[in-house]
Figure 1: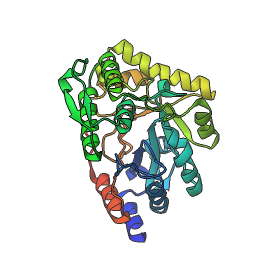
Figure 2: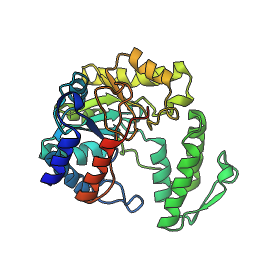
Figure 3: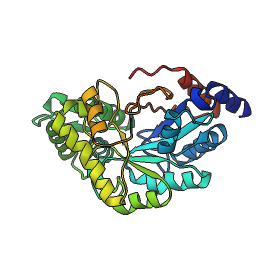
Figure 4: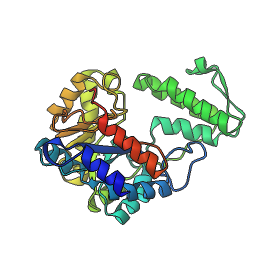
Length: 322
């Protein structure tokens, strides 16, 4: 592990030549999910935190960005972030972070708090819970998808991938209509406890974690009018500031691919609304020259220490393309 640590130090010395890794997570499940076996679960997240703590100087995200742009970032700097606002961030991830003495920033899509549910989770849980061997969408707004086999785990996985791919870039209204049709055809009611509630968000802040905005409804901002995109970004900021009694300075673009999920005018909106920094899902390490409103985030999904470390080393060498 010392060799990996030393290599990271050579790739990212302190000062003006320093680079900042920002890791991005979504869910941390208590146990592995058969539908998504590659997703992070508690044991793997605990191992990952052990590696990261040994290899890097882990900093709060706002502090790391400020130090980077002032040329004062320490060697091997890294920050941790989560997107969306899943309840397991509080229930599973927080105790593990606290055990390792690590801080993280949680970007919250505010419209789903307190019993809401993201559209993709509505699809996933409807298919997970469905007992029928097929999902018949003929005669619905999603009729183009026809009849889909869901009789076993591989079939459910394939169906979920196809459904999410078909829905992801629809307009918000179309997305809602298609998801409603899928849930109705599946014949069940997905759970309403997947996302955090107000008390859990406050508890994260009280535990020394940082909260950032992630829009209200997690739309594809590039597909919205300028006024609608501004409303989505501003609403999440305002809701969180009222909830927490503090200014929200950090923002993460939903999905986060430049030119696809957000546009140059979206970046300007974020700047105009008073954020200090914003984050994409571009795979790269950030430098003092990085655009503070298009900072990169990346997490390798390799499950062994060596492969995880190698992927992070390679990420140091990527050039930002935003």
